[in-house]
Length: 197
Image 1 (tube, rainbow, N blue to C red):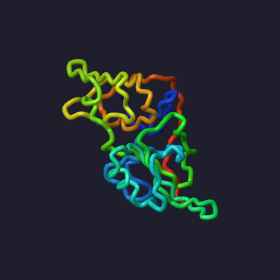
Image 2 (tube, rainbow, N blue to C red):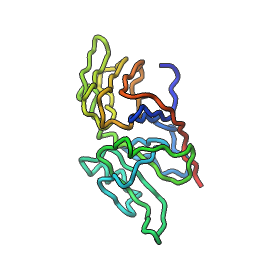
Image 3 (cartoon, one colour):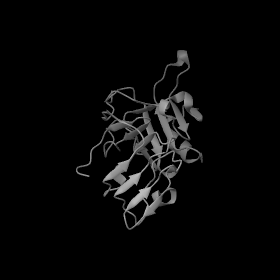
């Protein structure tokens, strides 16, 4: 597939997000085990299944302890007069209208993550053909992108027909991937590490 790149792309109602920088910026919290940041992705907090006010520092743990959690977002902003406190938001799935992209380097500190353990193994969720190295995930009802399956390195993945799959990240997890079939038209959105104040 050429040189890997980071960034964000939107396929109609499907957003694909690069894994972001290998190391977080110096002012970011340390990497969280079992979570991967979706750089510059913002989600509609009103769609969260659970909210933990003042739960910012333990958001990954809240997600890990909730069997339905696939994504979480942290918002460090504080504005007591309007009842806004640093909070953690958990999501079982995202819908197309829940996802937006921040301006590259937006200084608001809001970060969105997906919980790695919520991802099914590719060959458990999809039909994998070892001879053609093709994974057919058509209409597999995926809410998160699948993770690699041991011993299977696909050249092609068909994700069409997965209406609940609106954020796609970590295609770099599939080093030999040459083709991905997606259900919608393509729009690009840039991605950059959030600036620290």
